[in-house]
Amino acid sequence: MADESVPEPAAVPEPAVNYANFSNDIYLNGLLTEQTPALTTDLHALADTARARMSPAAYGYVAGGAGSGRTMAANLESLERRRIVPRMLRDVGTRSLARTVLGTPMPAPVLLAPIGVQSIIHPQGELAVARAAAELGVPVVHSTASSYDMEEVAEAAGDGPRWYQLYWPKDDDVCISLLERAARAGYTALVVTLDTWLLGWRPTDLDRAYLPFLQRIGIANYLSDPAFRAGLAKPVEEAPLDAVVHWAGMFADPTKTWQRLSFLRDHWSGPIVLKGIQHPDDARRARDSGMDGVVVSNHGGRQLDGAIGSLEALAPVVEAVGDETSVLFDSGVRTGSDVLKALALGAEAVLLGRPYVYGLGAGGQAGVSHVLRCLLAELDLSLALSGHRDVDELGPELLSGP
Ligand SMILES: Cc1cc2nc3c(=O)[nH]c(=O)nc-3n(C[C@H](O)[C@H](O)[C@H](O)COP(=O)(O)O)c2cc1C
Image 1 (tube, rainbow, N blue to C red):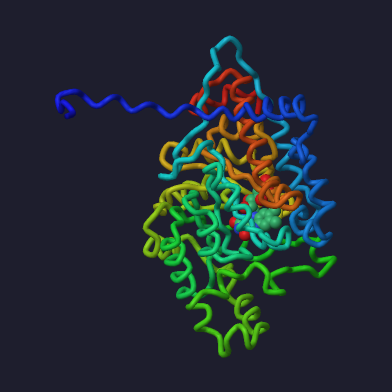
Image 2 (cartoon, rainbow, N blue to C red):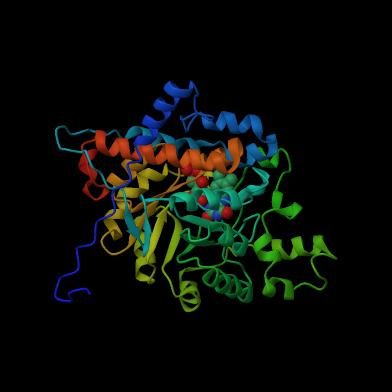
């Protein structure tokens, strides 16, 4: 019989996952089997592989930006401009990348950005992405504009962490219904996208007159929604074009203002994050409106051409609200060292966008897994090589000049 006076042994801490070992695995596998990785480990170059395997319209939809593409380029430049100044002899043998963000534990401060209409990229679309992310415990942010609806994606994700991204519709009943479904399906945080009340001017898609939503791709969350369906004169199956017209009429509402945020608060009990913030005053406004976080993002340069590179906005927003509000970052992140830079400037976590979509296009679920493994390995290596053991140690002093 157990002696009750004997104290419980201390919980054994989980060993930190050594993501950097992915590179050793690749070299060793090459030595033993003469095999090289099925996909390139250069996440910039992966776009070319994806391009060769995707339809020109789908590739153009993903790769294209607004207007001249200057903001899309500025996102990369703003990350390129800041450089890391590494520190030496600091025992970086064991490292920890794990972090809990807005109540969600994650193996590294990395989430998959909400990206819509993924079935144009691969037939398994968001399902393949959810499976790949769940394998590693990386959270996905499910887009309102998905090809598969939120319940299907939740099932594919299983126990995997997930947040829900809202394109805030004009119709309040549909909005409430989407939020209730998301909560029921296990999405724990709400990300509200503020920069897409109107679609940006996108020449790549305009020149092809290509908008997948009009072909009923990317509106699964609406078509399966009881409140949306209640607004249709005939069932979707009988009058599919009417459903598209109904969707187009409610997709977004450019008349919304800060005062309306209380509506979301009333209908969502978890954390709420505003995505698309670029100005510190808007970040303060978000905080003052009771929001739990912001994503410093310009939608990957797909909305307002001529806007600043997103990384330029990060430090001022962190300075304005970072002590009281979670500040996340996206737009232009391509490598582990990009993630390191954003963390150094105060981002609590980073959203990865186009690279995982290129992984999906190049190799389906396995392609997304590959991208995540590459990114986490390079982040782990960058952390070590810059002289840090824990993502919590990072600060702006890690980077050279402004
Ligand atoms: C093809 C595509 C579709 C996107 N769809 C959405 C979406 O449905 N909801 C949303 O909030 N953001 C969407 N975004 C923006 C991403 O969430 C993210 O802000 C952007 O991809 C970051 O830029 P990067 O991929 O260049 O790093 C989309 C981006 C791309 C490339």
